[in-house]
Structure formats: structure tokens, C-alpha cells
Length: 246
Image (cartoon, rainbow, N blue to C red; front, top):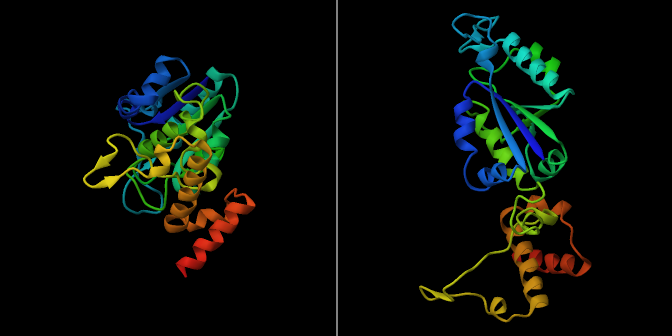
């Protein structure tokens, strides 16, 4: 079972965003649990204040070290171990499928969501084990990136997807984008489903899908091809595509 613990100023955002679709069903099946921990409840201020002005001046407010530290230590004591604590920040390594596969091996994952101008650096140095980014842009807080990561990682937890091979054949498997998908009707606004998919010939279908994945990756994400897991024949096919492209 995978247990997520999200340290946040907005627990209702996590609760409301994670109780539907695949995540909701995974929680109902007790394959994952998602706990939203309100950092404000650890404030020693009577008004539950958790932020203050930054030393040295500047715009905005900074989350104070004490509430964050106490929340992390309380959780660590409850778990009886020091878990991986992920801080969502544009300064971290950019999240990808390989990181998701790495994190999916854990039993407990903690997401620390900052707000305002960030969190006092001293407590980050004390508690954070992983700095991860959702991309090269700035968001209001870490909650949306945390939910995105939880969704991605949860798909890799055994038993979550109805089709057990789904997680292995979707985008980024073998560092390739996913092939195009089709469903009924066979003819839509003059556009037909590719004949090979109607043939029932599984080997030809698999070959077509792999070729489509290679084509799409070359067109949209050629950077992924450097680490793509291709057979010799597929590598030859890729070189032919590159020649035609040039």
C-alpha cells in the first residue's frame, strides 16, 4: 500500500482534488491512502499565523520554519521512521516518468507544499530529501504539482489500473510517446480507423503501434529518442524517418 502525506496550508484542496476517478477508486480499494496535514495547526501563534516578512526585505511573505518543522517531526514520529520528504519547487529536478517509477517503490511519501515566497531555508535543509519541480514556471503553491505527482505515481501501484499492462504501454514506455488510439465508429466524418487495427493480426498491430510511437516521438519529443529502448530493426526505421524528414 502506498501512503501519501501532504503538508499544506490548504488541506481541503488536496482532499477535494484526490477523491475522484482512479485516485478515488484506489483509496476505496485501500491500495493507497492520502492524508492532508494542515501546517497551520502546528502554529504557535494564537491566530494560526505561519508566515512573516523576509529578512533583507523584498516582496511577499515567507513561511516560517517552526510550523513546518513541527509538522514534519510529528509525522515522522507517527510513522516511526524518516520518510522521503518532497518539496515542490521550480529549483528541483523536473518530474518525469522515471522519477515516478522510483518513488512508486516507497511505502510512504511526504509532499511539502510551499506558498507565498517559499519556506524558510533553514527548515528545508533540515527535513527535505527531494527537491522536485513540475516544470519551468511558477505556481501559487505546491498543491497542484503534488496532486499531479500523486496521480502519476498511483498509476504505478499494483492493482490500481484495471488493465495491469496499461502503465507499461502508455506514453514514455521505452522513452517513446504513446501510439494513436481509436474506437467506434469505424468511419467518422470521412476518416477511417487504420486498416491494420481491424485485421486481427496481433503481430502486425504491435509493429504498427511501435512505428507510430517512434514517428510521434521524432515529431514532438525528439529529445526522448536519445534514451529510447529500440530494437536494431526499429533503430533502422528511425534512421529512415530522419532521412525523410531532412
